[in-house]
Image (tube, rainbow, N blue to C red; front, top):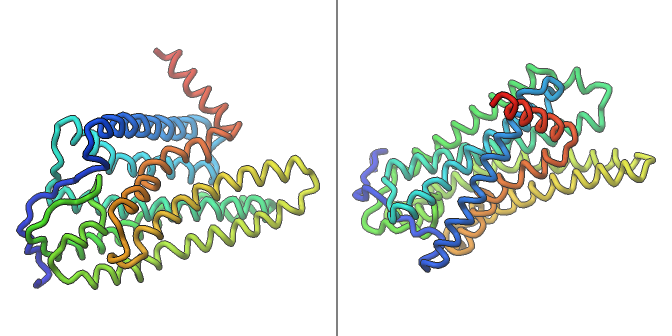
Length: 312
């Protein structure tokens, strides 16, 4: 291939989630509602944290970054789905497809890293409360976020460049609602073994260490909570942890099912259903699970909204 793109395909066709007109109308409305809830919920979280000095702590700093990433995550795929439905078009250019894939890789990695960083933050706060301020310094928090962006960007660039070297000769129909790596590999008429190898090896190095960090953090958190004498306190902590772990399980379960299997083991229907969960549903649920059950954040949110109303 000489490292250059020899593709004769200038655009791809995204089949979306359904070919039935009635189902398309319903899915359009459903995606529109979920996208608006995702954007509004996460932006409100960012507004509340940014305007309340009491929330300028490591936990809320990471949470605001997660909300920003989730807004970007949904915006990478859903607006294109909505625009294609309104315009009656299913096309996406070759460069647009690679761009979409790049941001999906980058933002998936960022979600992965931030979930791990937030789990570690809760571990330090619950298991080592006396050392929390000395361990979770502003400098460390900034380094963790900046380092996550750098690693995520480099990883996304690697997979995008590997995809760009492949040839796509004739078939340009993607049975999906966005340019995901698995259906693209199936369309290629080049040797895709290197791409698959890098997903299974380098991709695993990116995904699994944060996942293990989350598990270890919550094991220690659970052990510390069990030592709490108050039944009400234990129940409150377990309730919060179970919600966090539900999002972690949903996110990592779908990621592993979609990307860490050989391409021959995939089916477009199952992959599409799984990717809807982590690209659309999870970003929508995060504000509710991580934030709106939090009294401090709800109080700050009410104050921020009240100030905006009064300013108008």
